[in-house]
Length: 305
Ligand SMILES: Cc1cc2nc3c(=O)[nH]c(=O)nc-3n(C[C@H](O)[C@H](O)[C@H](O)COP(=O)(O)O)c2cc1C
Image (cartoon, rainbow, N blue to C red; front, side, top):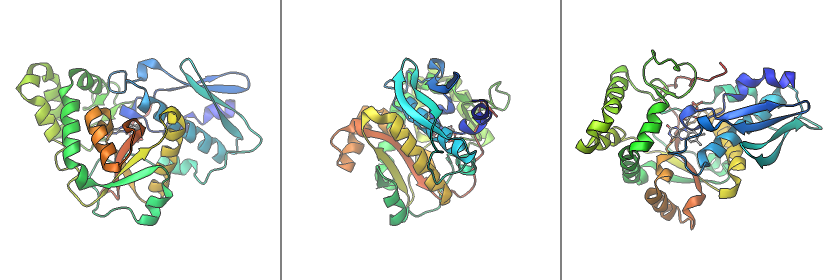
């Protein structure tokens, strides 16, 4: 357990919505409970806990990969309970994985510009559960989802709590979404900070339209969007799968830029399900554009760095 605890900084490289890093590890003599801290959940923008459970699954996968790379034989036992998804316990042999701690460290979201071109068919075929759409086919849907997101006072308020738009923010190096991770210039970060501060006054004067307009054009290029489709009652497992896919892509030089707003809004989620010919829109679990980035992204902050 002591050896496992020493690996925590690498476990923490797992991705989480708004970079809240909601996971907790509670150590006992021969097992570690994997759970979450409710103060790091997103009750307004993630009311069903979908992104929470996907993030916890990604965290579990990171724990297993990092332990295996360190030669520790650790397995995960799915055992949901209050504020808990399961346990890490000693196993007969290390977790079998093609990924390493170096892969976990190298992965990161990239919200900057991507080179034109979609994924090669053989790469897309390796990504079980992922469906592919052309970026341009989702342009209008993304705008509708952004309008919905920024039009919602409470969702915007919750997002604002996790934004770290100036280096003077006291949690800049700990968690949340920094100006650098969001690929914002200083001027853009300042403008976003100022407009969100004035949000209550400007909401009715069209501020949501201005904020949503900022991402107009994001999907106006020849590229791909990936949609993870899977069972709603297995979101932790699906989070583990998502992590493996992100590591596969990152090993091939691709990065992802999640666009969860497309499935957070019921109407755009239903439209997306229609485009994919998926009967139950709830089974759309994650959406991200994918591609070769034009420039590397700044690494995001972690509580354990
Ligand atoms: C389930 C899930 C949903 C996410 N949704 C979004 C999103 O809608 N927009 C976005 O820009 N990033 C999204 N992200 C990316 C996180 O913000 C990112 O993983 C986190 O800031 C840590 O940064 P890193 O992935 O570069 O390590 C999501 C991540 C996860 C795991």
